[in-house]
Length: 158
Image 1 (cartoon, rainbow, N blue to C red):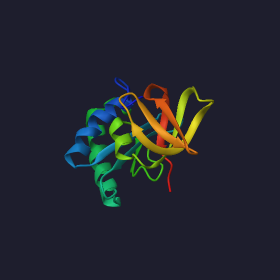
Image 2: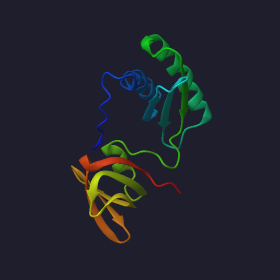
Image 3: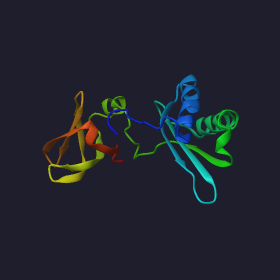
Image 4: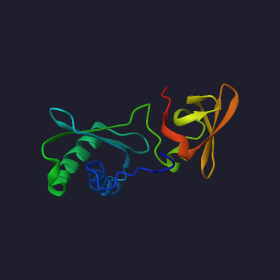
């Protein structure tokens, strides 16, 4: 993953991101995450959005209507699909360096590609973001994890 590394260029997920991002930016809504699942019976597109103060049902409905139309117009090869637009919830993924900065001081969960200090899963308080690593406090011990080692990061919820 690393800070902001979402290399889905040339994929349907990437095409959906290219259509969704300008819509969200125009509405001052953050595009948090996109999931695309081709499924066995139907294709599923899930889009997670956020904004300061939180997302409302009206925000989700508006983005869903607009984005559905944009996908239908710009991504013909997707065919039939189901679109869900929602808030990322209490376990919001952290995808970019800006996400990590925004949630400094919060409890987070990190999974790594390889073993770091004897483990691959960490839950702790996000203390510091460096150019190429994060430092979290886990049970009173500071652990530094290189951004390229992070396979998944999210808020730990309430």
